[in-house]
Length: 151
Ligand code: RB5
Image (cartoon, rainbow, N blue to C red):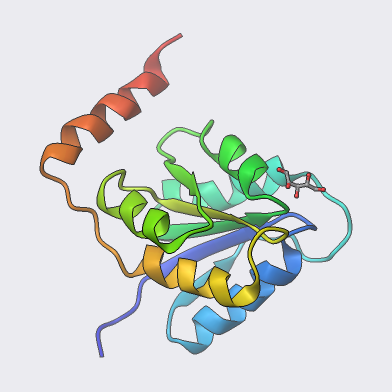
């Protein structure tokens, strides 16, 4: 069996239960999962965990990451402020697959108040098991990343 990648995972309080479910299930499936918190259902601020999880991508501890909050939107907005991050908030399988193929997304964000555990796991599988297509998309991804350096 091919070795599975290392995945970082983080959440705020609203995504806490979904994060734990995905962490445990993906671990059982053979992924190495780095849990970047939060560690309880107590109210907390999602940008803290967006940054902690993005750091695992930036320092190459993990190849891809997953972030969960209530909607997935706050996490994706926060993560996309961080250099080198391409976060996609998805609630359908097509988007989760194509954001890897075309955008080389490195973080999948999802909303625990939007998707149930079953769909969340399918989204994670689609994202983690799809490679970047490169080719004509590489120029566009480079252009997108160059926007980080504008004032
Ligand atoms: C927390 O109530 C909620 O605002 C947060 O989890 C997230 O959905 C923000 O985008």
